[in-house]
Image (cartoon, rainbow, N blue to C red; front, side, top):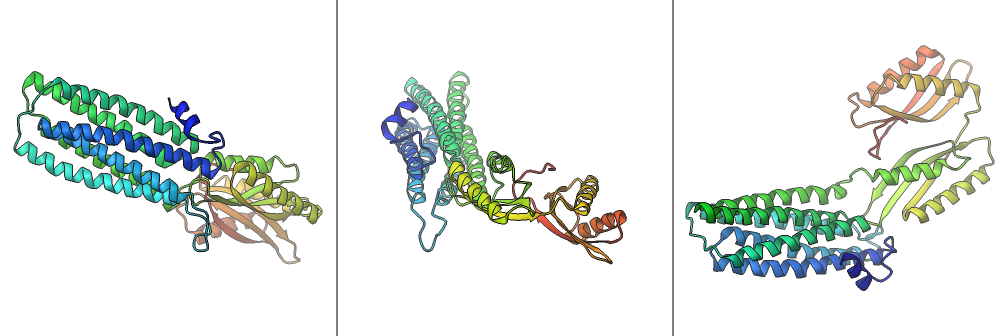
Length: 394
């Protein structure tokens, strides 16, 4: 059914890199979420009021939150697709993340209100009117929520949307919550225990927990989380495949929203090559990778002289030195400026977030280690941070 809906309502549905196609996926998911959740919300709230069940009422209000979430998601995708303007040169795609945060906060507020009503029901329990109509509605709700979960998670995977994946996860949580209400009613019928208020409290706490989880998932991209490892590897591997590339470093990826990714990277080339030819090669890499990966990539050229005998010696000595430091990930941009009384050894060091030493302490230790190899070395060290989330040594 999902494939049929995509083919019917999304034009050029296979071109998921196109922002307009991506927006269509988000709109479709939003409309389906609004319709299905509004239907469940109406049924459950009416049933909860009719048969005096705070647990079913709580579950219905949870569906109301889901419908509101889908509506905000729909608006978010629409606003996020707006083109860049003078005040927002990177576009508006991060609005999708903001809508996710708004939805998450709304879910938490509703959960707190339901907690208060459920607590009152625990203190003042009312007899629950058992009937098979209620059981049927809950079973239908569970089946619809299972389909919703699978639909949203798959749609999120297709267009790489954390918002739709979170919506799918929320639907999966609703399956658990509604199942708990169903089993509680059946147990109450069999044992005459007044579990309605407790089940309402359980569902409310579950809603609050889900809200906080969604806040974290949707806020992380706004705070600047590590980029997708697959994208990082794709950029590095495609660049390193070129025969004239000696090394890649200082890769930085900025996410301004889905399909709005900006990246920069330094590429080492042989300083003895024709610089115009090397510059053409860099331009070609920049253009082809930007097109194939659908990102905005800027490549900086670093000419290095690894044919110099002393530079080769220093490079090998540095590789041996950093094996003693677990939190040093890489060294790059190694240059040696020869002199009569000393040699300036210039290089960059990439450290992991786990490094406990200050930058000055680390520089001091490395300088001493390097000067043990040759007292004429005068180290000039730059400390780089790792911005890709990869903590393995290169």
